[in-house]
Length: 177
Image 1 (cartoon, one colour):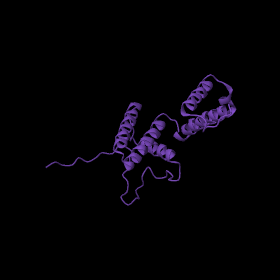
Image 2: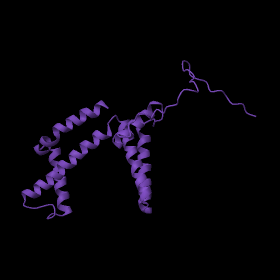
Image 3: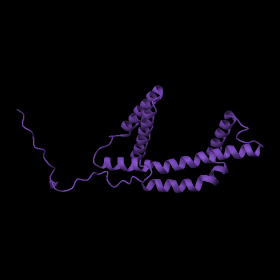
Image 4: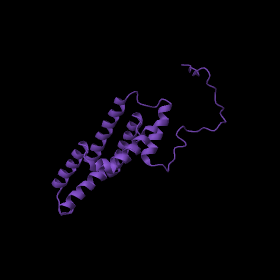
């Protein structure tokens, strides 16, 4: 018969009283917060007690695994599983953000502004040509999308004037997290 080994406590760690109320380290993360923020905060708290990947490579492998699972769910056309896998992907992306010290809400906000600026470029350019979005086709809109990206990379003014200042604020907020 095996005898159970008594778990030794690290020196200086006191034994908790059994009548003391147990509390999860995850308590205090507001369920009212945006979901990406909740995921960021939950993984941050779990990380503080050692429940974390040893390096970025592990988190990226998890991302690949979740993407494979989403593809499988898509093949099966299982809506419930697709929804779960999309949630898993978003959770892993929030965890990657935390791992890299970039708040996912700030990162997504920056991308949303970028999307809006590029889409506005398409609308504005078509309007200047006397066209509407409905008069255009996907190929033309995609070409204009790529043109808007090149203009941003070249430092042409429309992007810098519209989104530049707000991007700097988003970057500052992200660094604080």
